[in-house]
Amino acid sequence: MEFIQRNIGLFGRTAGGISRAQATVFRGLLDQLATGEYEEVEARAQALAARPRRVWDRSPEPVWMARTFALTAAVLYGRREHVLPELEALTVALRQTSGSVRTLLLVVRVNRAVVLLGQERYANAESEAAGVLREVTRLAHLTRVADIELSALACLAEALCGQGRFEEAEAVARGNLPRATGNRAASLRSLLVRSLNGQGRYEEALAESRQPTPPASRAGSGQSAMVVAAALHGLGRRDEAEMMARQAVDECEQFLHPTHPRIREARDLLAQITAGDPPPEAPDAGAGSS
Image 1 (cartoon, rainbow, N blue to C red):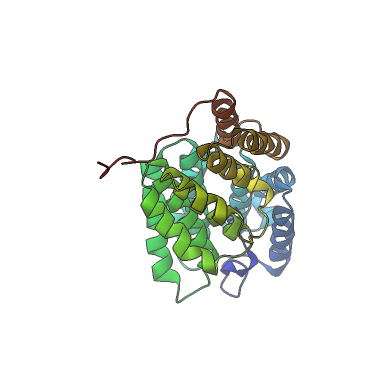
Image 2: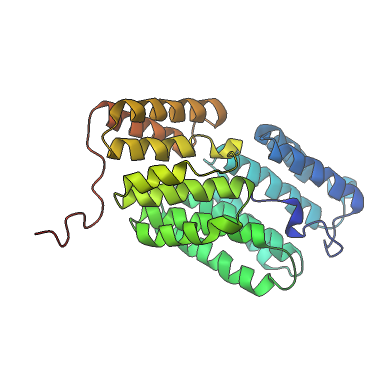
C-alpha cells in the first residue's frame, strides 16, 4: 500500500522549506513509487538525504522528506531489517516540528505500524495506528489526510486480525472500503476477506473476493491470492486452494524483497494446504451448539 500520495498536502504552499525545484524532484519520486520502482526510489532518496546541506538546502525539511521517501520505499518493498530504528529516529526529529511537516510525521508513523505488523507485534501496531488516527482527526480541517487515514485504518484492521479480533477487523475494513480507491481499496478488500476467513465464514469470504476491486500495487503482491486460497481451503476445495497458494508464493517471490514477511506467510499457507491440514478453527466455532 502506498503511504505518500499527491493529495496529502506535502507540496502545497505551506510545505515549509521545500522549494519548487525540490518539490519537482519529489514528485518524480512519487511517480516511481506509483509504478513500483521501490529500489530506485530508495537509492535516489538516500542520495538526496546524504547531500551536503550547502548543496541541497539550508533547511532540514528536504532532508526529512528524502529520508521519508527512502524509508517508505524500503517498507513497501519489504527490506525492513534495519528500518525500524531509522523510522523511530525520524519520528523523534519530526515531533519537534509544526505545520505541514506534521503530515510527514504521520506518513512515518504509518510506515512504523507496517513494520511492527511484519514483526507480528500486533498490539504495538494497533497502538501506533490508533495514534495516527487520533492525529488525523486534529489535522483534517487543515490539510487533506484522507489517504493517510485509510492507510492507518488498514494497519488497524491487520493488527486486529493478528490478535484474532476478526469481528472488529471486519467492521473496520467493511466500513471504510466504500470510500477507498486504488491500492487502499485492494488492501481493505483483502483484509475484509481475511477477517471473514478468521470467523469461518468462507463462502462469504469467497464472494467478497470476487467483488470488483482495483488491482493491488507491487507492494500488495500475493495478498489477494493468499486470502482466496485460505477461503478455498476452508471450504475443502484443496486443489483450487493449492493453485491459489502457489500463485501467491510466485507473486511474492517475484515482486517482493526476499526478506518480506509475506513470502514466509505464503509458503506456510501452501505447506498447510499441501499437507492436508485443516484450516484454523474460527473463534467460538462450536459455541451455542447442542
